[in-house]
Amino acid sequence: MHEVWGIAALWLGLALIATLLSLWFRIATALSEIVVGTVAQLLIGAFFGRSLSAGEPWIVFLSGAGAIVLTFLAGAELDPDVFKVKWKEATVIGVIAFFAPFLGCAALAYYLLGWSSQASWLAGVALSTTSVAVVYAVMLELGLNKTDFGKAVLAACFINDLGTVIALGLIFAPFTIKTVIFIVSTIVVLVFLYYITPRFFKRYGNRPSELEAKFLLLALFGLGSLAIWSESEAVLPAYLVGMVLAGTVGKDHALIRRLRTLTFGLLTPFYFIRAGSYVSVSALFAAPFALFVLFMGKMLTKGIGVYPATKLYKYAQKEAVYTTLLMSTGLTFGSISALFGLNHGIITQAQYSILVAVVIGSAVVPTLIANAFFIPHYLLPERKDEDKK
Amino acid sequence: MLKKILVAFDGSNQSHKAFDFALELARRCAGAEEGPEVTVISVAQPPELSEIVEMDAVIDNATNYYKGLHAELVKKAAEKGIKIETDILVGHPADQLIRCASEKKADMIVMGQRGKSGISGWLMGSVSKRVTTYAPCTVTVVK
Image 1 (cartoon, rainbow over the protein chains, first blue to last red):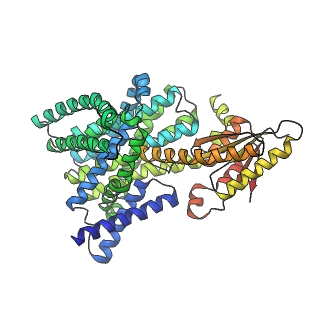
Image 2 (cartoon, helix red, strand yellow):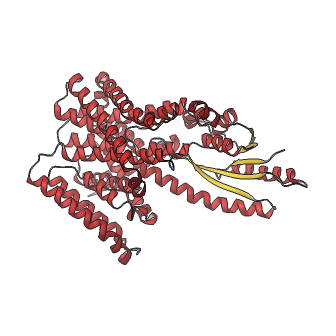
Image 3 (cartoon, rainbow over the protein chains, first blue to last red):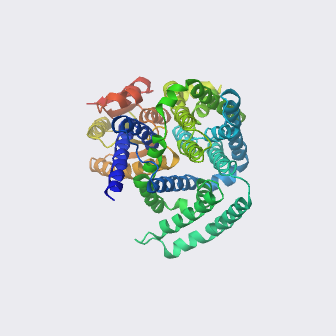
């Protein structure tokens, strides 16, 4: 038993280091944890000839729970009122923003890199996501989150990510009677949760026994189990539950804060460090061409998908470029997709490493470019006026 | 002469000094006429590349933190007979200060210099340097 506590201490020590690094460098904790996981695995392997024990069942559980709860919280960030008003535009932009990199990157992986069809589809899925947070940050900085355009683009990001989780949940699952049972059961549970949850919480919630967290975890783990049983992915129902409960549970700030504590304090460090520990640095050095192709593929297809949409709304040139640049790959769904592929034998460890590196690169590089060349000149009203002219 | 003063406030000792300087400046400028408007701006800065859940958590946390500090500043200013406004923005501190100064047509930005350098300074740039370079008005950096 002492080994279990020792490994737990090691992982939480790594999580602590990752958190400190994220504070010093002002970067996302998820990114920091992935990198720390990769470096720790490399060092422990080189000096002690051991692994980080990422395959231990309890680590797999904590890691999986992290992905599920984080995905639920991401879905719960949706603003249903915004979506109701702008659902047409959001759906059009979101579907384009999903399909352009999804099909483009899958085609590049298949035709140019010679990956298998399954591995190519997975590459498409992993690189199809958009970081809602990065787009939201841009909207907040520019004060566009209250404009029609901003609302439509934000809602579109959720549609984009919904496309990713649906693709991940259904493309790789063999369509059998189990799939039908999973889909029908999920729909029934979602309807049930939509109507029952607010009333149930109102009657029994807000007590120290944390009934809300137990209820939500029951729903998420139950649907997750059903998803895995049907050979789908547990994050699919989690994201849907989050979206369905966004207007009720999502607006309960105290509950969301408590769930965040559980998620960031214990669960997600295990998920992201584990995701990082499977990255093979030697595989990255061995395949610079694959890295370059998928990275450029992601950038170009994203540009092709998003830039025309921004121009459709008569956006000023610099705003359009800035927004397009920052519609980066989401670390969460990108890494979840890649890890799903690795765990199910769809991709090799080398392909996994390339995908994770591209997911990180396609988030880091555009942000650095955008920050270096578009801010702060771009934010000055005089310059904005010039652009509009 | 001075009609609108923006004070950059992040809760640090240097930003407290900047606030005191702005209050003193406003008091001296007042004379017989109405003094300049003083607006305290704090910026919640989400980490780069964060996911929506983490970003929302950071904004939520920073908003609560600054609300408490702003209440103290309002009280302190009221004791000196000066009425101030406060606001919490989201984004890169330098960019938001510049943007806010432009929108409010501020005559001066008063800010503290924290002297932070190293890797984060290299990556993100010094806030005071960025503001003094691009601000549309006079910038006073309090040391």
